[in-house]
Structure formats: structure tokens, C-alpha cells
Length: 156
Image (cartoon, rainbow, N blue to C red; front, side):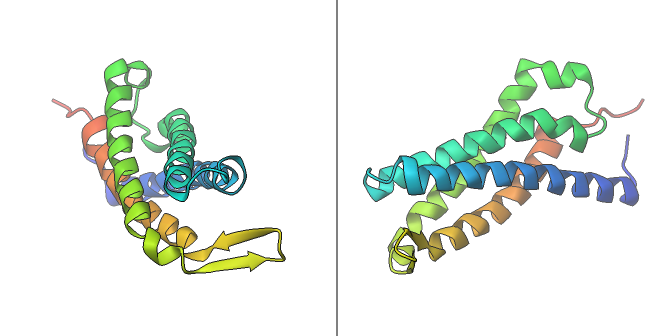
């Protein structure tokens, strides 16, 4: 079944809404871990663990809301272990892209720290890179999920 432009546009809007909710969960967990939970760890380990836990949060939110995005996803498809594994694989590749971008940019963002009233230090560059990586992975996730996970069945 081929989508018309209007259906495709609606699907992309739904993807952005679900992705926005998942990203919010990801960022909240990332910053809670980074600024509070793992702050005593060395910066690389803190960054890696915080990014991974934020990612897992976003992944789970996405998985539970994905039937809202891809309207043609049936109950069989959402319960299939193979579909879930494909979903996780596409997402893990996205995590790899994010982790790589965050770690490669580390020398830059360690120089752009803003002290917020002496309460905590805010890494502006870290937020910028997290947002940039989110945009890159957003495109990867949409096409990966649409083409490899939630493929429409061709009508005969």
C-alpha cells in the first residue's frame, strides 16, 4: 500500500510528536544522571552512562508509542520479537552515532561551562551536541524504522 503525500506528512508529524516525547524523557534522564547521579565519576564514564540511560528511556517511550506513528502497524507486528529486535538494532545504531558525536566533541565542550549561581555548572556545548546528535539520529531512526522495521505490506 503506497502512501499519498498527505498520509506521509501526517506520519512524519506523528513521528516528530512521539520523538519529542521520547527525547524529553531522554534529556531529563541524561541531565539527572549527568549532573546528579554520576557527577562523582570521571567525565567520560559519566557521559557514556548518562547518554546510555537517557537513550534507553527514549527507546522504551518510542517502543510503547510507535503504533501511534505507523498507523499500518498491526498487533502481530508490535508483539513480534523480531520486530522488537530490529527496532532495538536501529536504535542502538542511533545510540552509537550519539555516543560517538558526544565523545568526539568532548575537548570542545569542556571549555564552554557556565556556572549557574554556584549551584551547578552547565555545559552549553554538551547541550548543543546532544541536540545536534538528536537531529541526526532523528532522520536515521525515521528511515530505519520505516524501511526496515515497520514496512508496509504490498497489496497484491
